[in-house]
Length: 536
Image (cartoon, rainbow, N blue to C red; front, side, top):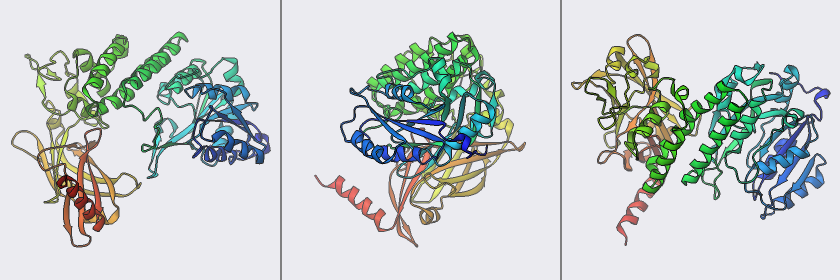
């Protein structure tokens, strides 16, 4: 969708910027909104009772910029909903959009959204949001499948996947539409308020336009002193808040008669929310795990048969079945691997007394009879990876999966090392997969440490593309084996760099990754680490 810079679009949009104690970033957010050009009539900056000078900074900016209005809340609201509602109440333009103080609007975002809204007469227009990891700058698109090409929907039910994009900030709303339907954010301290607001929007059945343009940059600062709600997941109360928001969104859509969208909310919970938190369970202490497990079982018990009528062997559904069948934390490493993206179902592969595939000998009631019939592109294939830096070899082992892998006929694996923070920096090598005596398939390939270290220091992720006899392929990650001497830093001699510090490790999802530092800097880190261990 080409943006329309015509004068008819001038002054059509109010941008509501909210912030609390974010003086380091709020000016950049405001400037990115003002920089959208004449389509922005005003920027309404709502300061949620900051104590770090944010409000005074905004007032100084407003003194030099007539399109900037500052609203100061006398008491901190404790969340994002109240300041957004305050900004919505103050907005005077025909369209409104929302921006958080630590994020930015990329150039052209407002024009792209506004052109689509006007051309299609849409009450809600959405575009692509990218998550930008800082300080690395790595960008990951949010729900890219929704925004792959322009689309116009008469109502949200025409594309249930809309419920997966729970963000409020990558969308332009007709102001009168929100007000006519009384659509607002939950006030006060209400984590994940976007989920509820978006459900209220979809429940009003607006006409929707989607554009492939980048319209929002979500900054992810994992090392920040104060983590955002979406990153601060260490306490079980965060999980309780998330399930409450999902439950509320489901009820809103169900009450509006949008049964298909309500069911899609629960499917999204299983495939996204549940998998994300399960991946992190091994990182938590026992008290958290037990509280999380009990709460999750109570939440999943609300699901009816229709919510679980899909493929019982799909990763999210299978996770839910294991949770409901076990009264306490159970088989966490395998659950973490199943929750990974792509999913891995690691051994052991148990069967019931009558030969039916099942989750484990301890939970034979969680059957997997549909799993072997899934197409190879959907199988949760498990590949173990053993990296020995000293010999510079990577050993791979593809496990059989109830006969499904053997029937597909593995041929080879394309081994891909992809730099985490530098898009497009990839090294690939194809190696044959050979059958082993125990029914698995194996491969051995050199690890190009010299080449990787020369290209870039930092983290390299391992991805594999498995190819099969009929031409089918499947992209998988590799489960990091943690045997003696495997996942530990080592200094490897290098003709080019002198030394390469290698540190294989398992990601939160259990996949193998490799961090490299070359030269004296790497050697210094090793020496410092050893001194810390030796000195009292």
